[in-house]
Length: 383
Image 1: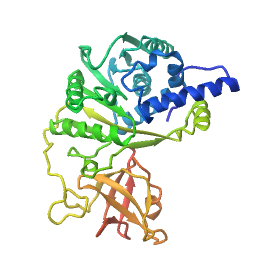
Image 2 (image 1 turned 120 degrees about the horizontal axis):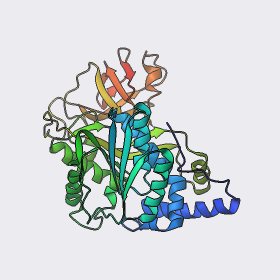
Image 3 (image 1 turned 180 degrees about the horizontal axis):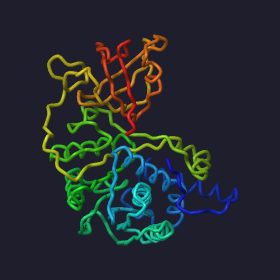
């Protein structure tokens, strides 16, 4: 996966690196720790913006490209229009522009970037020009009070924005859903809406609740979900769902990660991609297992070539079995195996990782979920 830096930096001194690490820790605490910066104009302060550009900009870039690849998003058009709401210095829209240009170099990409911070938008404009993209910026744009620009866009991006909206209001989810519906209405017929959030429990569960509202209204979830139905992760307290992806972090991200203890060996996000066309097949299905289903299942298993998304890291239970959580049309349930059984699919089972998409054929039905057997076959899919 590409892992660009937003611009070239001269080799920093030890003093400059120490200062950058200190600023980065303050930014991290304000955004994902005690979250005191949420809702503030934190990118109007040049040192915070610099910390973001050095560390979080490449992370957001990688998150965007990974989610678009997972959704299999591609456009072949003479002109592609991207709307980036709450863009900051535009890592998400520039990542999307690079992603789309890589598959169709002849396409002209036009970005509209909206943010309250003029300083961040100035950086975005310079980065867009350096990459050969046309960018229109709208400053003093506040998602909670300013109208979304009109027009028809092939991609609308809400990158780490939704969790910052109306965070102190009891009706915040209603307001956020209305905002997302408004953003969705700006999509061209073949367009998609990309929503990225931090991989935190609170923000993740709220976003999944909004996802369920979109599904109930007939929207098509293209990634990471493999079915359009209520999210099973929300049915138990303390659970959420996120995607993660391997990448090659830029040298500065690695260095600052070592100095601050911020682990970015994997790119993690709670996110989804939604297609513009309504899905008329979506049903408001009941939550919870039905008659004859296993725990955690919403429908009986079809044991022949089901598609599943791996939604956990490997876990070792007391019986010595390694298990993953899978999510598919039957619900969310464990899939386990014991090492050394010699089954044909054993090697691929133990190579699975979170976010893999697999076709599972002939699993063993166990009391606690699914198991690997001599008859089981696993095929990894590309997206």
